[in-house]
Image (cartoon, rainbow, N blue to C red; front, side, top):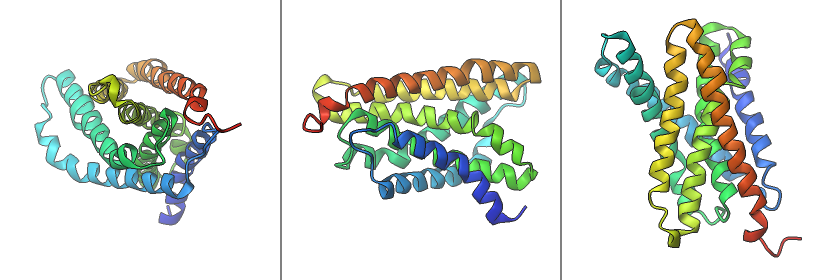
Length: 230
């Protein structure tokens, strides 16, 4: 498939999700330029993950098979990817003046995850020439990346906005939760076909629900951070 077409189709779901999430910030929508910058950093983190993987794969045990799946899913894939996505938006999410309410952290964190997922989508499409793969990933892996890094963004924003509450362990706890959910999703997909339903009907909905709950909570409290807004 043509590289431009693969990139356009592969990036479309991520950009649509980004547009949808930005609309959730009713009182003070985030600047498009800054959001796209974080999205681009997420794309870069995907490239770094691809570069690192060959160096990490020799550490994956081959026997027993279940242990190999677990190390691959939780450490080599979920652990590395969530750390890279966190690094992609941490500087902006922790220091930029635009981060002035909890929902901002969710949106910027999700933007990094969507950038990461978009690169993956484009690569899968270029390798398979199957547009249905990207259509399926729009509501599975793409959403999972957005949910996990969105949770991390929420934790970073809360830590920055409320340092007096001693929430220094919130980011670490959220990172461990994101790795556990992401790793569980990948672990069951790596196994036999019947186990894939555990990922699609268990881990994925849980990630989506947690993100939705955080969005709802943060959105309801936006007026507290912008009391002058009608």
